[in-house]
Amino acid sequence: MSFYSRVIFPRFYDCLMDKPFWAKYRQQQLASAKGEILEIGVGTGLNLPHYPKRVKRITTADPNPGMNKKLERRIERTGIAVDKRIISSEELPFDEGAFDCIVSTITLCSIPEVEQAMAELFRILKPGGRILFLEHGLSPDAKVNKWQRRLNWLQRRVGDGCTLTLDVPKLLVTQPFSSVEVDNFYMEQTPRTHGYMYCGVATK
Image (cartoon, rainbow, N blue to C red; front, side):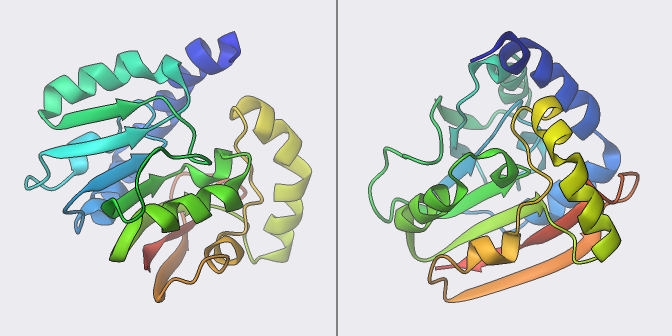
């Protein structure tokens, strides 16, 4: 893993994502989290303060060891017990049906083999389990869509593999979820190319 990924990007990520308007949506996304929880792409732990008080323990998966220092500080402040795994989401070392709830916040856009990862998430969900997702992706607006494709090469470099062109609805139908609920909107204070959001719940 490069110096940029381990050292620079975690600081850059916090500067961009640790904002009040992001916190509002994190809290909404996590309001129904319960049971055995896995958070993929936990990063520096920006979600941790927004879990409901009933959540005392979560498991996390993130392949970037450079995020850990900031993550440790947030774990100490929130008091949530965290079973940290430095692993990618394409191959998860958990039994089938191990989790009631999986959380993915601005994560799917950075997974190289994202369809494989989605299959793994579906596998480890219990029947009736849910994926709570808040992701940015491809806009249906033709002008925005065009610029997303033009800027994607730059985004992937600056964003440590993040893509602007993830088709979230297309990804979700690769697995036989019993139901998918999605709200779409442009994130405030964010360029439209980077802030078309998919926020919802996919139930197994």
